[in-house]
Length: 113
Image 1 (cartoon, helix red, strand yellow):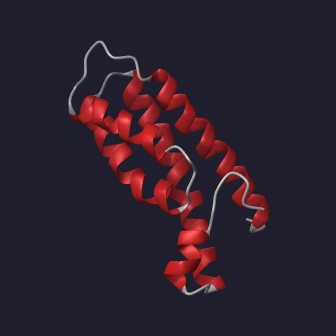
Image 2 (tube, rainbow, N blue to C red; image 1 turned 30 degrees about the vertical axis):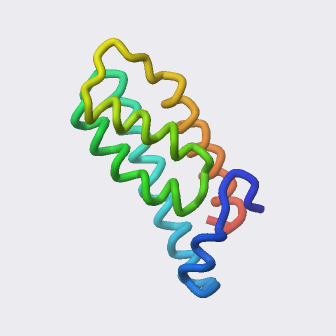
Image 3 (cartoon, one colour; image 1 turned 90 degrees about the vertical axis):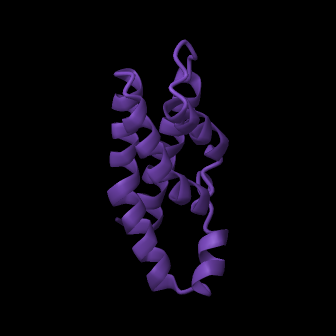
């Protein structure tokens, strides 16, 4: 449990309310993988605005669950925000995608979802 994500911030925020933690875990699974897919599509199609929006939306959850890729996600977000043509962010994107996939699989198993 909690190898690819951490619940420390959530436990502190919720005063260790297990029902609240489970609700956030379900919300993570409903939103973050879908947002990550949109992010990948936006980056691949060089849609800077969609990249910025998707990454910006994901940031608080990625931070709260401590996936360890917040800096990479911010780099992807800034690439979109600043329309950094010619900059390759594929490595950062892949790190984010892999972290989301690992955390999603682990959360499903840990919470029996």
